[in-house]
Length: 362
Ligand code: GTP
Ligand code: MG
Image 1 (tube, rainbow, N blue to C red):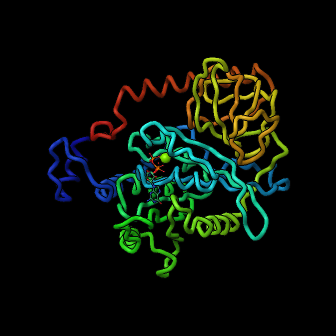
Image 2 (image 1 turned 60 degrees about the vertical axis):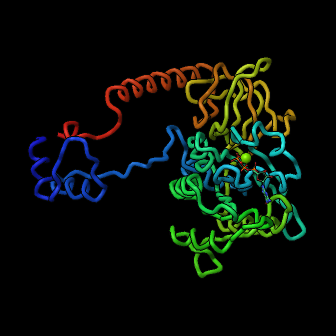
Image 3 (image 1 turned 180 degrees about the vertical axis):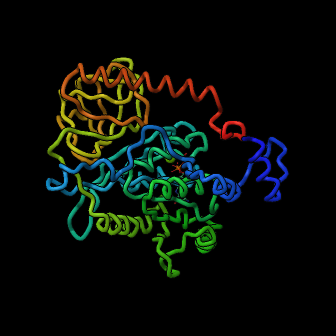
């Protein structure tokens, strides 16, 4: 009963006043007394995400082929993420953004030169502004590698920490890009010290986190950074089965005046083709057209490739999982049951605020 638990708290030296929050160790201690297992909730878990590796199925294992790495660029606002990607893609997106702030996830396929060849890579640019936390969580969850950009004249800031937490929660290797080393007041050593004090020890200091000092604006050492990315990617042996129906995650979605609902998918396994029937969250439909990251019509999107899809009946929610199914009937059924279970979740979420209280335990 509630009284028993209150008693246990007193016996551990806690005077319960009905409103204080217990730390994790205390909760674990109390739960042990009652033989209750404590599950560490992941604060950055976004509903509906597919963990990267879980997407491969048994039947895929003997049909796996190499796929390009998906690399997400994260970090505090204005630390230079879009500028870095502009340098890599030879574009000028950062200069044209409203208020100089990124507000969505951009997904781009880039040919990266390595050892005289070029290899395809997919980069996701995420917003650094604090309002876009869910977007960052989503970015980290579909990715193979996180580049965390830290401005050398500013150091670790709140969204730097958040980005690190997302990458860790998603179990994704981290590469640090210490940016803006061209600026007066840049102090890359201080950044490395700050990072090591939170447990990210630079490789150069005997740790296991690669850190590259760059100027995204001037392009200094960006090739070193890309080389590091490719090395880390190679170790992961990234594979998928392109010869099956597609599965993946919605990274962005919206409504276009002329095209109707659209969604950007990252294909994580299989190949998505024009004419396929997809269900994603509560939305479904027949893929009427596919557009690549340059807005060009394509017929197919293979593993790791971002693609914009039109033909859905509704706007899905970014973070939703998508899959190809056999018929529109199946798609409709799946979408409807998804909507129903979401409604149930919402009702139960309303019933409590998700926090475990003493009375809900007892
Ligand atoms: P959000 O997407 O809003 O989080 O910002 P961001 O991280 O994408 O930063 P962005 O690339 O938009 O750059 C912010 C500002 O920093 C711009 O004025 C850039 O020109 C400048 N900047 C980026 N990289 C460098 C660099 O290496 N050196 C110098 N001096 N300025 C840089
Ligand atoms: Mg940006």
